Length: 149
Image (cartoon, rainbow, N blue to C red; front, side, top):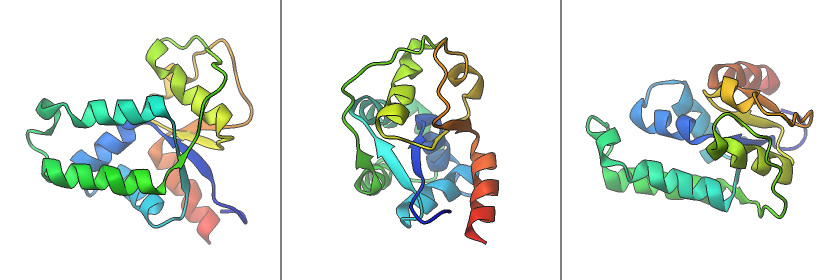
């Protein structure tokens, strides 16, 4: 990456995939954050969404890590995050109104990227922003490897 750490909003679907599929792409991204190679951003709304997802026991019936280990992983991730206060709500009018907070966090935190599997919904808004890109985990890892060379 460039001289400074890339500021990134990590959608909850990526964190969930990292927990459920330890040998996959999303786990590699989470590891980069934990190693301090990229700067994840966190807001109050995103934090509550992470907590909500991790509290859904039915999602973790076949999970390779225990509930305590999931909590430890979330706490380690949160310790890497830069907390951002959102003072202005943009309301880009996304298909899923519940995703607006990701755009607001990216704007308030001056993020360069939002990493998500939900590309179509996050790019469907009436307000478009040129300051950040919305990309998949695979695109991020491919670009990150190039930046690291």
